[in-house]
View 1 (cartoon, helix red, strand yellow):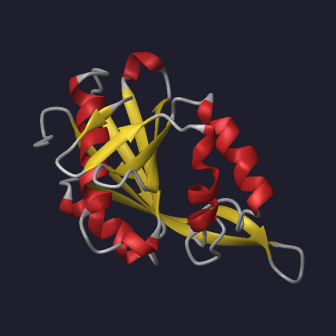
View 2 (cartoon, one colour; view 1 turned 90 degrees about the vertical axis):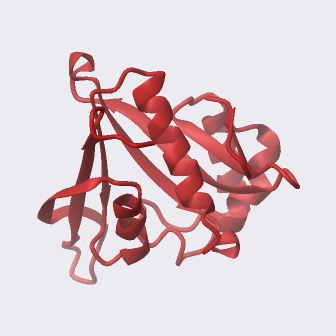
Length: 178
């Protein structure tokens, strides 16, 4: 996917994105709700290379200075015939509270419906991640469920999984306002 919004360029990842990707995925607070820990500079370089070849990851850069500020993930889920897509996102907090994430995620969702022919789009987030679920609600997604202890990304001191709840959000094509 390659598109522009009033302030952003959404594009495939390039190998030159590794330092900027490390700038936010190397921060423990940024990846707190992700299924991986902070990435080292070398891990970010490897991950960037992987994303160059993976169209599910969309780099988001400010058009004015071409700085990578985050990324959006989108993928077709379930059976292809169901035309259900899911989205996720991670942004550098240095560029937070300016509406960039909302603008970028809106563009990706719009592309899923208008270009990819999605019937339904879903997203999940940890209930503790208030800014994430507020973004989804701002975009018009509906909270459809609160899944109890549905995900574990780490183990506790006793070796047992640390379970987290998840909110499930969705919007149908006929509901999407773009």
